Image (cartoon, rainbow, N blue to C red; front, side):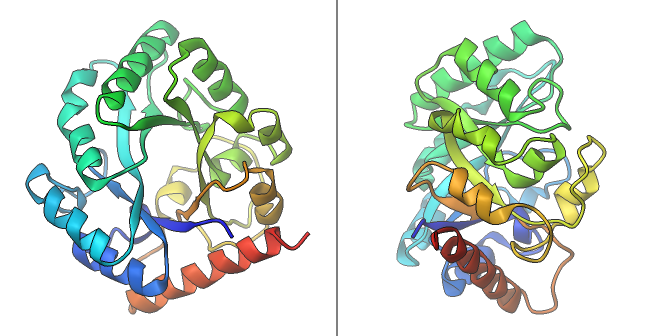
Length: 264
């Protein structure tokens, strides 16, 4: 069965140490963590350089890998070199990839910045995964992300596919098969509305459903992913009265989806 992780966005109400402990207790194999502050992410939920080594030891003690580190936005005025210390934190944590968000409408600048981010990440043994989404015009769809990655041509550059963004982009799991080689990561959630569109920021950040609780094509999405690729749940919801029970329920829902996808 595929490894199952959970993204920190799923439980931003928890301090870092509690998130790690409860993720391990719930039975997850991996986590993704914020190493760069942006937007509405509280500063105390971001792994600081001074605490990275202790957190890496805590993760190892609990048998958790780090799938990804987030987020690295490319936007006008952003200096990619400023991300060096955050990428170094990712390396200390043993992360596999860094997620790039593209908030720039200038194609040449996006390609240049993405290429430089890939070069910088490679110094720390990290891949870079473009997270496409209709909310970001530089790569709104999987097809656009594939074309962008091909143009940049960096060997450690690929795509992370979030089922919510795939649905809102108006693409289905079948769109993934031709570009499966470019997929470096996958994020899973569910939802009730299958309507494509770009007005879903609150849903993306705060109101998603566990796999199996909505109408998204969860099983066919999993079956379209490359064999052996780890999957992580990204299911932000309002804070729970019992966060341990909530993470355990998420892990159970994720495992059920994986079993269903492998059932034929």
